[in-house]
Length: 517
Image 1 (cartoon, rainbow, N blue to C red):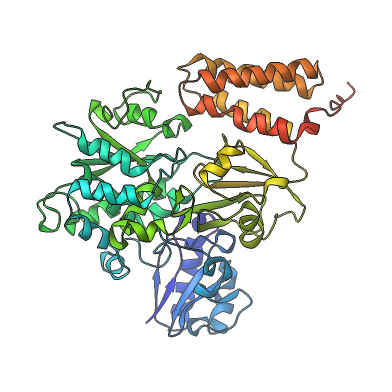
Image 2 (image 1 turned 90 degrees about the horizontal axis):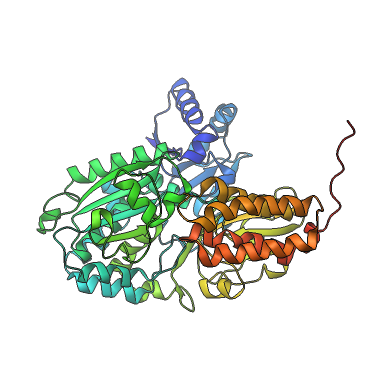
């Protein structure tokens, strides 16, 4: 029986993957051909979704983007044996977009059945957990620290140091919380991993529990991710039945329980203390720090909080060693980062590369330039609170320190491309408006500052005392940066100030004339 892979990742589903799978099965039945359709995760080549793959003796052969109307012609082209078709791309692993990547975290995503323990183990799964079960908690923390892994949620704090703090804390209960409230515009790596390879996240969280002495974990996922929520719940049930979760994991005497909690989708709950409030059943609002969550986190107990990609990087570190992971990257940015290409780009998708790749390489070598075909004018990196990087800085290396030195941030690896038709004054206004809508309202600089920011930028766009209002805007940005309680208000000025700095001409245009009444 020939195996045919059709992703059930949310991105593929949005492009009709379910209907494509049904059409292929119906066509096979009509021709009395035996096929098994596997619903895998996405390979991350979103511009080719639904990407259909066929298992052949030479390897998996890719076709995409496939529509329902293509089903009959694929069979006529003998695609079950890798036959030529106008949608064919040859062997999947030989597609440049994939071949040029360095996939560690996403090594299995799109390749295995996401809920098959046997396939997960056959592709190296649980080797990290097996290694962790033979080590002390302190030694696991040491390995993670020496690997150079830093939080992939955006802050870039050393993961091993955070784990060591929880390990050293004395308490009757400790927790591990995964922040899967992926709310940055243009990002989808967390969702893709949870839908395509959920066991990797669970394995990483279990290792965190063993390392720190935590016996209960929670995955906090926004309600806009229904497929990820469903897949994570299924994955937890499968691993509980297989003895990789719960009491006495694989006969080791170690225990770790895990549950999914659904957030309402507030951007502020991506901030760790707001997430803790939400997990405790309260309104998602920021907590002052100190105390830090590693000492007083969920329900006042020591808590490890990491992003999906941080936990998912850990199994490789334990199975291959800290040095293996550390050999990727540059400077203090070690390992790989799954970059997410979005916006006005021809080939959107996920690209996992070691730190050090440039924005231009991501845009041109992988992204294929803008979708419109016009010159790229700006790239926003790191979500809606990230800086707008001008074309003159596209050769900047992607690492935490280089970006910080240039007034930008890598963040969660989200990259949103704009061509030369973008109005950067409008984009600056959007940043302030976003903050005004999403602020939890706890601190004045964020709650009031964002509203005033929209008003000031509106006056600048309207040509009202531009020079004076640009000074007011700068002063307002300083107040928000220095006085806000968390990164929401503190970083909102970053896109605003980068737009003013790099694209001043957009703030000095003649106001658009009103239509005659």
